[in-house]
Length: 193
Image (cartoon, rainbow, N blue to C red; front, top):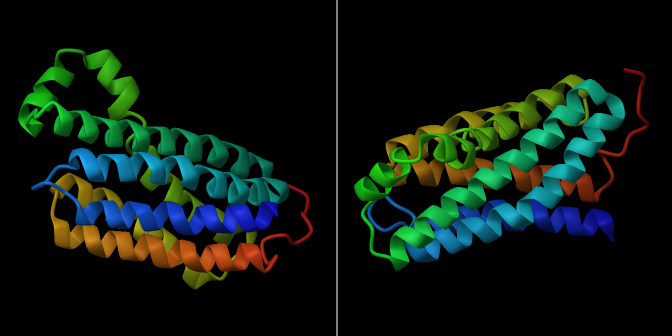
């Protein structure tokens, strides 16, 4: 049951994130995309924790920081989704939203700017960790690293075409990873650290 729920989380989280990009309002999330990002992040974290726990069983010094990175990254996703939601319902432009955030630099840093990069770092770091522990094939690790790099490029540039490519890379990588998890391929006996 746990593997099935984690499998579902690893599919639905990235899928909803990819669907959210289809609902961008200009170059911003808006209400619908914001809600989808919040749900995506909340669901995705469960599967990410499951994979990082398997890494931690083999290499605790690598897996436990990865667990924290996954939680912080998904928290950042929820924060950015909520930002888009509130920009949409209160009809606040992206510029005005950023100006308002700048009026509260410490709070904005803690809620948005520091957790924001944690998700792409989590994705790329997971690729590195899976390669290091040999829990996944090298090509899947490379796909995760590429997805982790493409994700912030698409969000910083606010270019829908790049975002769709990044979303498809992420979805493909996590669909494969979820399948490996469901088949028990990530449940190899741990080796000493």
